[in-house]
Length: 94
Image (cartoon, rainbow, N blue to C red):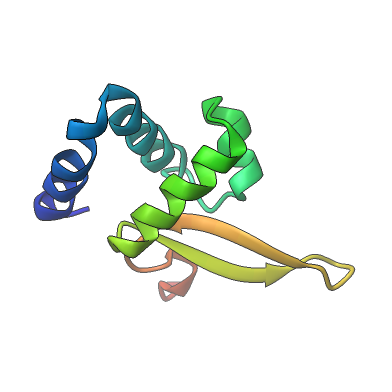
């Protein structure tokens, strides 16, 4: 993530309180290991689901996170959140 985007998160989040800034950092950190559902992120970070969804939407709007669309084996749509940038699955295999 670029320093400019980190500064945008810090500038946008800090005035409204440390909790908001803390939530952004927790969500971004949670997606480091790979794509996760909103429910997984909420459970892992202990952030209430609605607040987590709102923060993820903000981070997607800033271009820090990306939402991937997928489906399970039954054809149900799944949304996975990951950090912005090149998808690790798109790298050429050597």
